[in-house]
Image (tube, rainbow, N blue to C red; front, side):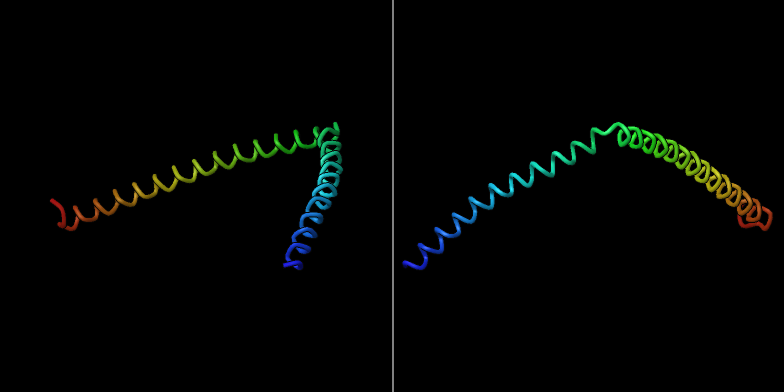
Length: 93
């Protein structure tokens, strides 16, 4: 029983000390992150990258739409050809 109490006390003390050290480390990391995030060069670069990504997405959407339209037209054309062949060969009246 005495060992359990000592173990639990040690665990509690370790938790408290670790939490304090962890919080200080966390705050230090967050200060660094804020410093980078608030840097004008980083903000400008992020803006440029965002704009390029937007243009790329717009281009990709346009090309995908064109591809779908082309496939649809080809499928319709093929269907029309097959129906004409079937009519010509007496399969459809």
